[in-house]
Image (cartoon, rainbow, N blue to C red):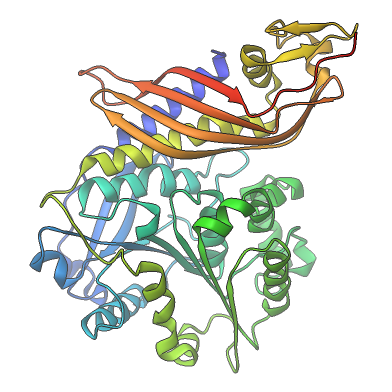
Length: 452
């Protein structure tokens, strides 16, 4: 195993360990009376963000009345600048009223705070901001471990407004095995390339500052993290696993970018609802909800039909958190291959494939150095993604089954397009974190042998 793989696994194991720690006690509810009676304030120490992070949690009345039931959950992501004062309480009250009226199934709603207001729900290029790792690798497992949730993608919805709509789209499209639905309200930026001089709501100064701080001033890094590109990379999984809704105001400056994004999803054959609200501009949540009326709740009813409550143990099931964290661990252990780590790629290929040497000879399991410049140049990867499909837990051993899809060539010849992956994770009774014990890959097809 390469040193880089070991380092990544150690970091992700630390995230898993943090995610399994108990939540801290909630502050006195009187500390913020705007939250309402059924919304709690919570904090926990985040390894990803190297700080204490907070979230507000709405818990429906049915949670206490039905101790055998498990509940779906909505993760509601705020826009730039964070939640304005009182907005969390207003949103929580809307959900509470709809649940009491029977318009939607009873559900939990989490309102995460990004700590700074303009972190874009992204892991920044320099690693200083790790909001993606916080939400997917820590917050979701944390909630699953401490509350009676459905604990599967079919019971998780991402929704957000403005920057939060962008975050909901990119996280939902990147992790279709974690989130089963994405709802974007006046979302942005949804364009493929960010041009600070063409930032309709943020303006050139703020857009440039965000590009510099979060994306390292690198337009290509912005593009790689964008919902536009993630939709292209994961189109097949999104089509089959994720319900998508996109709502934008007719007077919103982001209308044209949203329209183009909807057209992009249509071209990718990704089913989605796209609605333009007349008389609504950007930054007008009350006007947005007023224009939507009762239709706002239809999306939640459709997504959660059959997932509104599942009988189970009275206490929270930590296995839900284990599965979520193992999926995140498996995906992350593959993600850095996308960043051009040819050493890891050559190790992977050498274990399972035959390669054509520069002299035309076929070499089985021989291309292992990864440090030979000539060998590295033989490998050209256009794209690669790892899709976990199933997690099997048995005591201190876990098996993650998945598929790698890629476009690559070796010495000019096509590499396998699909690989079946089986990863085994283990830990001892004294350990809380998982470690990769073994991984095997089986190609769906092999590159053709070189002619004699």
